[in-house]
Image (cartoon, rainbow, N blue to C red):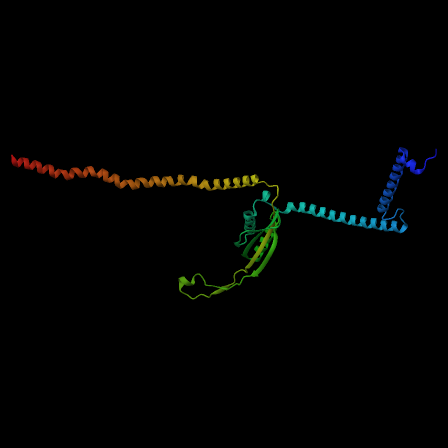
Length: 293
């Protein structure tokens, strides 16, 4: 007996067939939708569409290369920064610039035998969490060759100091009258000669160092270094104090008998004076007894 489509789909086999057909249609629509979106709106891309995609790929590749170059430039900059840290002032290696920088300039002036007239205090200013500036002002007044030697000695300092500012000015010179040394004794009038002193130059400048404070430094290390320095300073300060009593003890002991000497003389003289005062009384008593007899 032949069944109609309505009767067939009412049977379990027909229902299963209908479900399979619906599922196939759903999958087909889904595949077409995904393919069209993935290909830019078309299921089968054209040559123009592929050229546009190629241009986008080329553009993205160029952008990627530029980003890689910038990243490489940042890496090179970081490498140069790490290499330059060795030339900066390291507090762990070179000490604190607030004191050591002044010592460097002072030692340079002593080696050059230049007259260091003024030496200011070190001023610091932060750059970031690890770096900071340390500036120091100074004034040197001396002859030209000594000033040049001073500059050369400053250039030899380690770590190297940067010149922030330098001014060189000529000091005014005045001629001095010099009289012959024998004129005052003989009473004669001697001719006076004028002498001009050596030309002096006033040099004012400012040096700068970049201080590097590693972020990994712990407070324990800083405290240990500070305690060591303070201990050394205390030991150096107490050495003269310990030797001072030894030098002053003889003076104290020598002054003590001198202070006590008058008292001892008075005590020694007191027994001798007492009999002298009592002798007349004893003689008077003896005389009275004899008169009574």
